[in-house]
Image 1: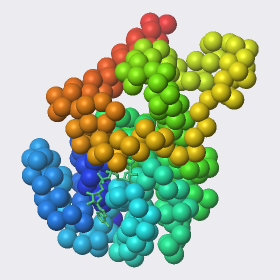
Image 2 (image 1 turned 45 degrees about the vertical axis):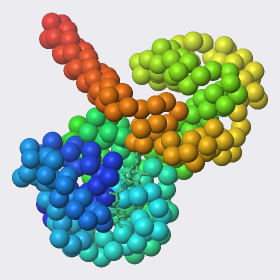
Image 3 (image 1 turned 180 degrees about the vertical axis):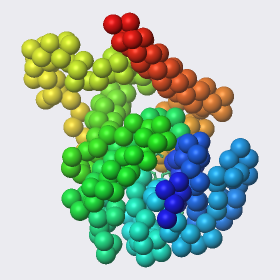
Length: 303
Ligand SMILES: NC(=O)c1ccc[n+]([C@@H]2O[C@H](COP(=O)([O-])OP(=O)(O)OC[C@H]3O[C@@H](n4cnc5c(N)ncnc54)[C@H](O)[C@@H]3O)[C@@H](O)[C@H]2O)c1
């Protein structure tokens, strides 16, 4: 087994950006996808990583990888079948699933050795967004958890380790809570999608980006937030499934930017501009952090 070899199975939206993140950090990346020609096309589009990206001939090729990131479709049976086959084909490799909804204990049910599996949840696009949620099951081996933490740091990511598994982990639970209210406000005609996004972009999001929601509330004063929670919690949307607004869009084929329209219309130049804004936002954040660290080091030196 080679520590500098990582496997990525499933080369869709997520698998591609995970593979790029690994190759950019100097890993050799073994790839596979069930769709004919997808790995070949992907490698052809990235001549800069010609040396680093390698198509697997069979699952046995993943035996040489220290970690395999599973990024296939979010269907439990597909993942279970793949992970079971991989456990045998790659007998000592760590199995890291990028699932966004299944808990590691659900994914490990078919394995003989459940200690080998954990969730390593990247965010789209994985070569840009720094956070990775690492979610162990009660059976996950602490050595493998540390190995995956170390691997994510080595590709420039910021791993956070959850203490216990829970559906949706942390990020998707928060995202679901906020989106439930966003869609309800639009569905009730209280605000347009543009207004909701404007409110978040120009108030909540920058404050949360700077300090996080819990620290933001601390800064505001917890007496205020007790009053706010007491008054608003009973009045918030309590839908237990996606709202009709969302279902109608999906029914009409308006799946978001990937189909050209969602709640907004997405001509290609708008989609590109949105991706560019996101990339620049993270690049600026990273530069600012490096700058702050440099200033801190200079100040320390001057003491
Ligand atoms: N899309 C996101 O924003 C996002 C974010 C974080 C995590 N995730 C998770 O990442 C995983 C992949 O999501 P995605 O959005 O990249 O999906 P996707 O549909 O874009 O890609 C899935 C890929 O898996 C391949 N595949 C399906 N079955 C396979 C098999 N048995 N063996 C090999 N390849 C197979 C498909 O051909 C496809 O290329 C899912 O578990 C998803 O929940 C997605």
